[in-house]
Image 1 (tube, one colour):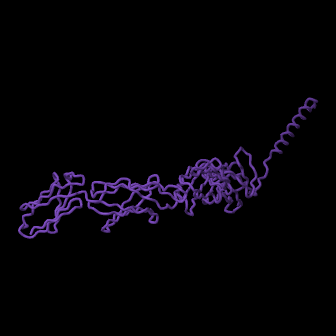
Image 2: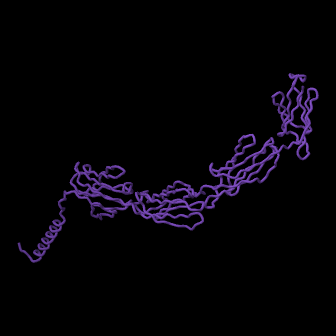
Image 3: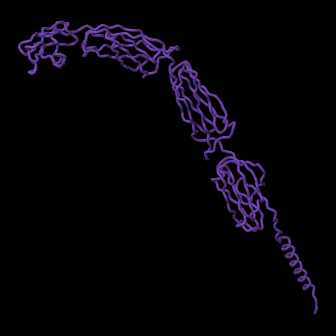
Length: 418
């Protein structure tokens, strides 16, 4: 066979093509898989981009996270345990390529800040025990706040504390030394602020009473987080002794009338008025030694009370007190009978009393209560047109000795029938 140059040229071309194909396939031959298990960490899932894991590494809460291992084991033979303060979570992996198993960490786990142990098992053998720390994000939203006590007395050795717990959007608390600012305004003073730091997840500040009564307003902010406004009531200190005086008086024994008493302004040692609604006690002792108690509440540091007049002539000793130790001056009031005189006669079995004349020369009004006391038995009666007409009961003989008394508005007369 005759070999031509054209045939040789075609043969050379064919041999070159075969060599190129052999070289190409030889270079792309799959590499032998590395059976040594290793773990890598990614801060974000971006295609095949993988960053090497570092022992004790940190990530931010909410970071998308997965772990890869190169292994010849089946995915059912591999597992990952996510161990945190919230307990252990067992996770299964996905085969993403030949010899590579990926464990995706759910967001609900990476959302929680704190230390985490990552334990990876292959065929029951622990091949990776790593520790990482999840940092919280910036504090946002409303901080949990606590306050107590909610009132302070000026002259007492007292203090109150406000504490806040700043949280991020996943409700993770802030780490130690995270800055928190407390803003506050004392009564009749300008706004002030104080910078503190979180310690054991909590930031706090103590507040002492000022020398002025009123409300202390307090709030705190940390990062982009704010607390609600809190109020602390600063109350007056121990009240000093005070005075009471008569504002209105009808000096007659008439229970339809009232005596009105009023106090001076009740102050503490700093000149602050006692709190509105403070209970003041009034003690009244009459000339027979009988004690009566009345209560009233202060308004603007002053207390006023209206007390019903006695129904019989007497003398009152009055004193007010506060807390049992703060006292007022003593007042003495005399009440005289409003009745000047009346006649009292027995006509057969009929007792006739009146007309009953008052202090102004008037006839005592209709409906005024009176008492007929017959042999130690008391019968209540009322005035009509200034008189009382009373029939002796049929079971009593008017021929026998009777002890008969009539009392009205504290004035009493006796009538003996012998």
